[in-house]
Image (cartoon, rainbow, N blue to C red; front, side, top):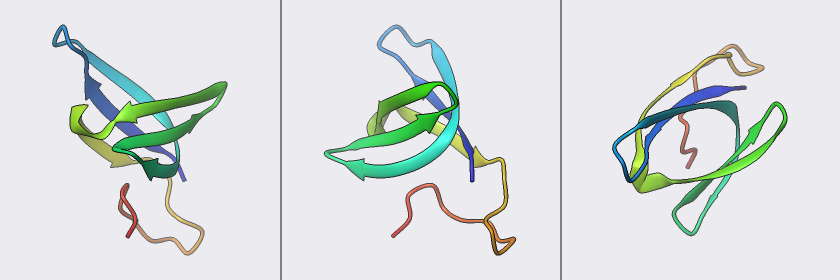
Length: 65
């Protein structure tokens, strides 16, 4: 399932990434994109929303416990 994750950089600019969360390690969210991967600083994430439903048809949390 994919999420849209909105982050802010040091200059205050927003950056929107769409991808599948892989893991959270060392305060970084590892997100698999269509054409690559990115690690986002968790402290710089300002918003997110789920794009696809899970296989069971339910909503899930970006930071799964």
